[in-house]
Image (cartoon, rainbow, N blue to C red; front, top):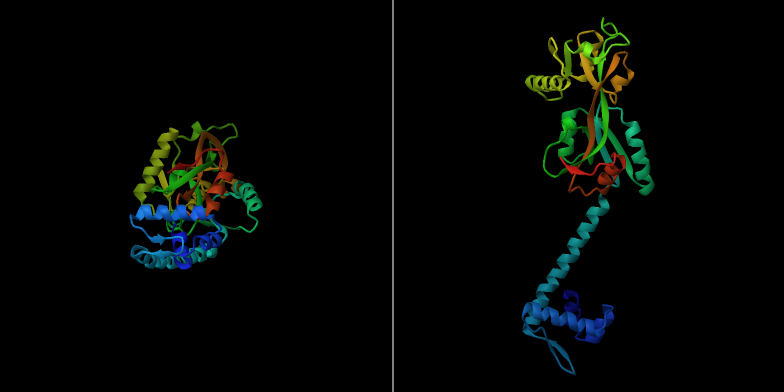
Length: 294
């Protein structure tokens, strides 16, 4: 309606306005009549000989002319913004996870849909991973639900449930091939502290995990990081619960015993992200579970 009004104000001809706007004269007349009805003022005087703006028409012409200029400037600014957005997907994941097999299929499928997409994968400690995600420096992160960024507007999809295993030093007297997890329930329990986690928070997580697994350890040992936890286990200072996605689990000489429980690995992205590749990639690597709010 505004475009028709501005054009008619300049041409003073319904015929010429219809030609310039690729519309019929009837359509132009309909739009002008609707605008006049909405505004409550007559904008044009129409006779068989001429079309002339009323005072209301002149007032709204000044207003809508400014609007048209502002609209064009905002549209161009918005176009520049989106054309400058990199066609990339920046993913972060826990530094000790082995995810090449998890990511490769989704990446291949997404590259097939968007050949120019640039994929960036970076690994971080748990706290830094979440901080970068919340600062919008990562489009999507992959981590365990235990470390989920619990803020509003974050969506998640389950990637897989990875089996938990109990890791034991091969030098442990109970570490026979026919041993079971039950043989180690009272052994000292080793837990790796998460980055920026207090000692009391680490101990609470360790006690909670022991309760879930029905462990009654003689003592709980909190290691400063995962590497130290593995080293303590290799030295026979206790047992460690881990997943088989951990690079250290895959390449260590420790004995592993299935616990019969799993831990959920999930991907997380911001609901309002303008990078559509994030949600699409999450759908490609997810196990079929729908997206849910954290």
